[in-house]
Amino acid sequence: MIADVVVDLQYGDCGKGKITHALCRERDYTHVIRYNGGCNAGHTIYHEGEKFITHHIPCGVFFGIKSIIGPGCVVHTDTFLKEVQMLDDAGIKTDGLIFVSTNAHLITDWHRAEEKEEEDIGTTKKGNGPAYRDKYARKGVRAFEDPRLSQYLIDVYEELYESEEFGEIEIMFEGAQGFGLDIDWGDYPYVTSSHCTVGSAILNGVPPKCIRDVWGVAKIYETYVGAKDFEGVDELFDEIRTLGQEFGSTTGRPRQINWLDFDLLRMASRINGTTHVVFNKMDILDEVQCWCAFEGDVLYEFKSRKDIELWLETKLHLEVDKDIEVMFSGDKEFI
Image 1 (cartoon, rainbow, N blue to C red):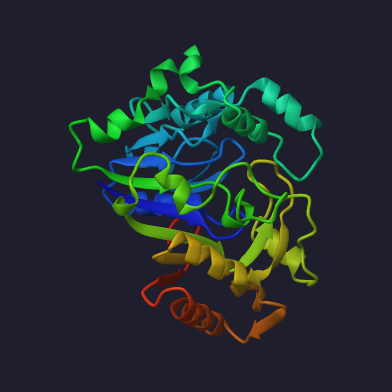
Image 2: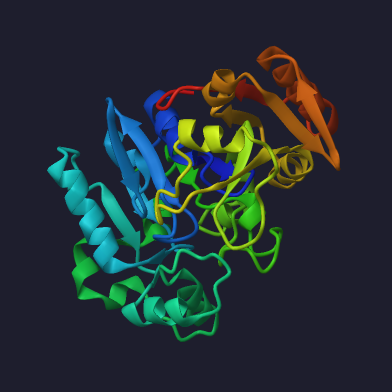
């Protein structure tokens, strides 16, 4: 068994769906597994020129790969079923390809109603927090208890370890949210309810020794959706927000903008053990012709795209791992 993991090195919305989709096109995965989060996620995918936004379903389905919502996720049944229908209507084959772990917990309408009444710390109000709380309080509702999901249920252990494919299984683990929102490593309490690191992928059914590559995804600038004050002071940020279409794919809220924080990037890369780092949205800063990054309280301004690329690549090789492959992308569909 071999597994690759996609993790977000910032605050979500960095293009994990794009990277997962691109890798599914290039590699021979047998399964794609979502390993954390719920319908608070919103992965924007461009497939054969058409735009899709998925909240639950992993990207493998676009290439005929078994796509599983793992036991580490929480699922809102109505949202899931609408998403299946959306893909069917678009001509994407889903029959026999989309599955939900029997152990995944459900987001109920009560969870959603409760979260809407809670103090606002910038959540999506999709019920994820209360669903995870009930899971750990051992009073949650699991997927096998909802008859509407019966045709999609799968025992992940049996699928990975007791099927005829055992020994030839190659998994892509697709993550949600980002390291800066991780329940343990993020800026608490402005965090999500799940773990957003490579460790969360392992908890969905594979031993650490099976991990081959860890793909860290970042933007060349940073965005954040939530209640804390995040946006920096720069007249370019409104232009970047417009050019980059920086509005939440789940909530539609404008994303706050700031320059890349190398301290966060370094920490996230070290803890996740990244083997590859992809910086997305290079085309946006090419458009505004401005490239900046923070390290500590110092804001570095670069004269060109080539200069910031060289700085980032050198810093990651010196301070994280000399063998990390660093890539820069400005395309919506391809790396």
